[in-house]
Image (tube, rainbow, N blue to C red; front, top):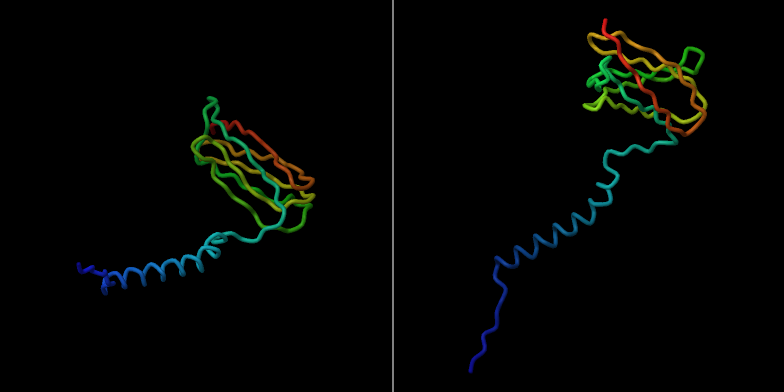
Length: 132
């Protein structure tokens, strides 16, 4: 009885070569992809809160601006928009600093609050916007 031995065809050789190439590329790119889009950042504080309408419902699309207080060091300004639940969050550098928090929305009077951060912490605020 004659036994037939299976030989690799060009097609299976191509598949095997492609698989090896993909596996090696994935091994090279995966560590780089894990850090993709991440910036090396130091300690941060979080300023978060919720914006409500005068009726008590959440206010979507309110613009929240965080500015360094006038007596503070010159730093950049951070902006965020409230989401569908009226919530917002802004990350600022940790450390002792004072900030002015301004919330404005179309058809509503803007509001401003001052806050002082001591370090790496989370501060929560709520705003109830009044119509113009």
